[in-house]
Length: 413
Image (tube, rainbow, N blue to C red):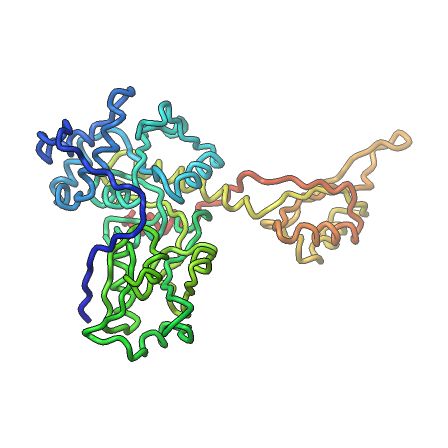
């Protein structure tokens, strides 16, 4: 199946265009790359990254695509470079996650594209567009990054040098999905198979799909047996394309689906290309070759896992009358909601009566899933619990996680 692409103009934000009198016009491409790679301090250089991102890195694959440049980029820096989204749906969620993990980003000047995280020594944060983060991880100009999984899949394109360290950061959830109009010839079409069998699509009149995913789109239609398809590259309001008559369908990110419904579009069964959310990614080459990168990745992974594990749990503390620890434990363990992480913690509560130290009550501490909290409190009362206290958890650190062992295996360590 031959797939063609054309540029489709849709309503969108203005695109930066480098002016003819720009001070960078007289610089050779290699000079621009070297300029970008230099870490800067102070506000005087703050405009450079924004110009370079739009002017140079749109064609980064042309400028810095060789292994020789990769090696040079890895060796010439002392700092570890972490790429974070500068704008868009992932930007605020990424900063919130880092803050919740006690890794707040310190950005002295909001106009600068460089910052740091005081808790992580020898690390600089670079705010970039998501697609540039992935490209620069592959090229060796970044060591670590946080982006959406859809961006990794589209711009990483299966690169062996790109490793997903944590695949579920639990924010930025969406799906890349195929959508068609609810009306006209599509009114009774509800699945990808039905769409593929429509007689309207021929070599002379192919199915036109507007998308910003020029790698994942053709790959998906080929895998699903859609023939006679042409793609139009568009980065604006894709939902307008079918109504304007310049596309038959769209392939775009979908969250709640409200925007699709408001534009008389619908998803089709079997039309989801991938599920996406925030992921923590790294350059395999940097993890192996650059000092400190693996240790930093390990600390960030541990903080992410401990925080995300704690988000779904509450600590519940209560007093319970009983004849012995064993008797109280038996009552608790008969309730399926009270297993905790490994089991309940039970300790005697001492009081003084008639000059003697006695233990009529025992304190129990358990971890309870948030969705089972009220049911757990009811069960606790039913077996004699009183003075029930509920506290949120910030972190749950356990033994080394499976993700860490998987990463070491991928690195051959």
